[in-house]
Length: 326
Image 1 (cartoon, rainbow, N blue to C red):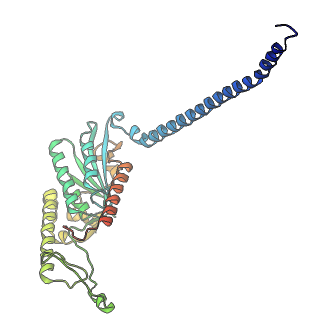
Image 2: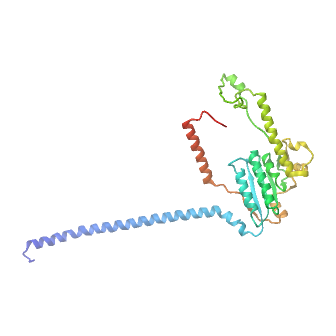
Image 3: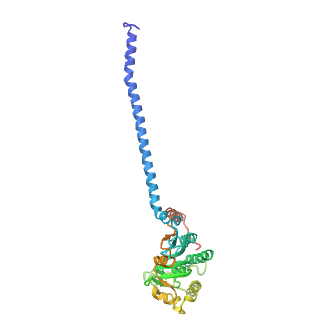
């Protein structure tokens, strides 16, 4: 190539012209790579922070259990709560209470179990499940006493459960009793007549519409239900007599459905002593530290159950279910 060669000069010019374009492309690629790395780093930091926050939340929720864990306490009193209505899938239901009772009785460092009750009652079936389980656990762990401690209210099914305990404590102002069975309902026959509403009810089975609130009550159906309630009431009475024995006063009003204060209930033998859970732990079990074994609610499980129930109801509404076997 010589100075006089026009093609050589053109090649140089061409090469000189491509340098800025290539450099710009390389710079863009490098900048994009750096930007992508920064973005990935930011997302990585975000997810790490999210994971850390999640772990901290779990730690915060479980911290009381970790602090009160039986393995970290030498000698203590085990506690199981029966709060609210005793019904399936409720906080006071058999499944929840029984799980807590099993954990409490299996706690090797517990000097005794307190069943703290604040309940208006509920299902006789659920109360019976809890009663039977207390009896079974007492037989399996004869050296572990279980005392029921009544706070505000221990009525009906609540007392059904309490009767299984070795001893029952209450506050002087606690409400105790209501040993009976009830079935509630309404009658709208007169109101329908006044409104001119005609009741149209088709059944297969003579008594399938038992105590239908929109139809006149039938004496034979009322009598049948009264016998049913009497049978359940008698079972209730037998469980209370079995649990309380000779401590009960010879007073038939005990089983009439009446309620009493803790002080009056003590005179009737429904309660052994007056006191609180703290007093029982400190003065009776001589183990002031209380470890709560009550099963904590599993919110995800309950949400899943409610979602499943709602989905089932929605499908039933779409498909239709005019016939029911209940």
